[in-house]
Image (tube, rainbow, N blue to C red):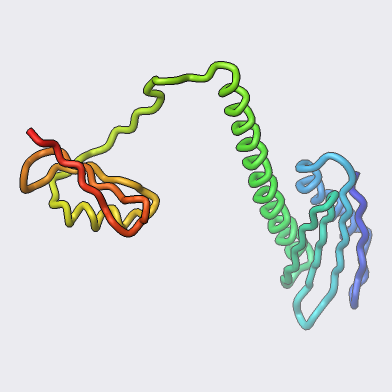
Length: 177
């Protein structure tokens, strides 16, 4: 249920404005179950009509303040801003909940049927001819990567350059034959 409180400063909150706000609150209400507390302050400054909206749902509060030549346009802008904020936060929360449930699922499935000594992931990538120095520069560009596989231009053999645990030095794997 939406509980709307409208306050007017230097302008009267007419019944038409109240009806318009109630109609527009449907766009906000669809995102929530339960009580929604909405505080709206409308005022006039110079030639601008300003609408301030604050939406409180449980522990979350969303706020928007806009001004426009027309009050209805200012209200529309506020609703757009609030809807964007709500969608953004809800998406973030849904993603966090999904990630938590996936982690929980992974922990549960690990206990049930633990896989051992199997190749469970394959990554495909291009290997390019380069010198070990060039490979080192490439690896330094990507701090999240621990190694790079490349074809050594000097020997025409596949090599692997990897970061050592000290994160300062590198190791090079080079086949013998």
